[in-house]
Length: 414
Ligand code: HEC
Ligand code: HEC
Ligand code: HEC
Image (cartoon, rainbow, N blue to C red; front, side, top):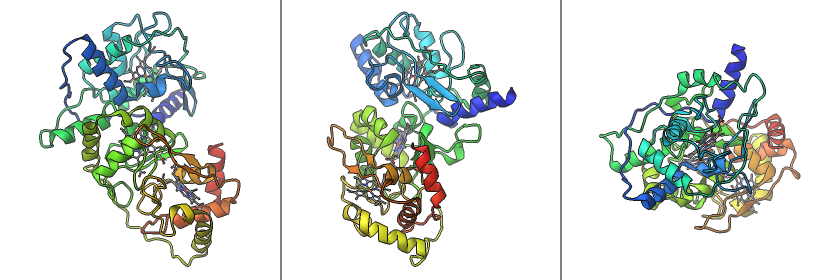
């Protein structure tokens, strides 16, 4: 039983994990003047926190829930958070709502799974969470019954989360670091609080808690690799300027990268709708997160696997990405200098080469370019060779990829 509970914990936690430990102060600097400004403030906070991303099912009504969040042991379905009195949260008091969002406890006192990112939302102030409540009270009430807990026994035992909270949950609002600028503090609050960036980008312990000493150094989620976004020039986004960071978060593209998969959703629902000053604050903070650098040497370009990879690259990839890997700014991402290419885990690049990718389209850039799929055309060994080649060219260095890893990636992404 203890084993089973610890697996519940691992699974739920590996999806979304705990808060960052630095204690910081509530940045509650936008006092609401009247009811309508309170609703507007709550709407913007809900954008920062991407509440809609999980609580609106694809094609479903806003905030009516029903989107299953996959965990290794089963599904946890996001709840209906519209003001419907029977199936939503219309009957909840403000206090109950605040406790759910910042402390991870449902109205009946039971533990929520950290598939709901309360370990990050706890960095918001009570005033901010009540503004979100005011906004949610203004949306259409939808009668839609959702059964959140669809986990099989014994994973369905919510009390297991009590132990997880004890291990990994560090409640309390953001505290300002007086040694840093106001802009840095705003960025730190957005990234560690409502933006819950660490939920996907921070490596997890074997029990699924954030590895705080490796904050934002990359983690695999939903079959994608959320890359290192520290200021490391070898593994992270150290080669990006603050302007590059803002462009990526606002439009989904910049000269190095194009956002697809879970990050495409994040850009659509959240960062593309953030104010320019909030995006600049996030960039200032990320450019100040120290990362690790690695001093691995690239594979010898005359090694057989590199020569095979180079030939495939010339033939199938260079027309778009260029022989020198530079791509076309804002249309075709540069593979040279892109940390995602030489990242610790090749999950995303294998997925993109096998299945292709359609990067996100935003109001700022309506047509996202597409990467064609090569999985039907290239064997496992050929994909391994071309991936090894791009991971060891133009200044990148990373271990060779085996054909067996490609076979696994084909299966994982279905
Ligand atoms: C990453 C996905 C995700 C995001 C983002 C998210 N939620 Fe949730 N939320 C969930 C899941 C999954 C549950 C169900 C958890 C459970 O039953 O243990 C949930 C449960 C809740 C509940 C409890 C409802 C009930 O009936 O018990 C509330 C309230 C809630 N979320 C509000 C919010 C608000 C407000 C936001 C934005 C600030 C938000 N959520 C963002 C996934 C998410
Ligand atoms: C639901 C998971 C998830 C969340 C939440 C998330 N990201 Fe990401 N992020 C990803 C994934 C996956 C990728 C890789 C996308 C790709 O390969 O197209 C990514 C890519 C990125 C990149 C590009 C890195 C590179 O080298 O190409 C940046 C920058 C980034 N995210 C910043 C953020 C910030 C800032 C936040 C919080 C406001 C955030 N992300 C929240 C999953 C997430
Ligand atoms: C028709 C033009 C085209 C061709 C040919 C092409 N790509 Fe791409 N590639 C793109 C576009 C556009 C994207 C961005 C799409 C996205 O990430 O959603 C991309 C993205 C990528 C990425 C992810 C980069 C990142 O930062 O997220 C990798 C890796 C990649 N391509 C490798 C290759 C390889 C290897 C080949 C040859 C086997 C190849 N591409 C052929 C257009 C192309």
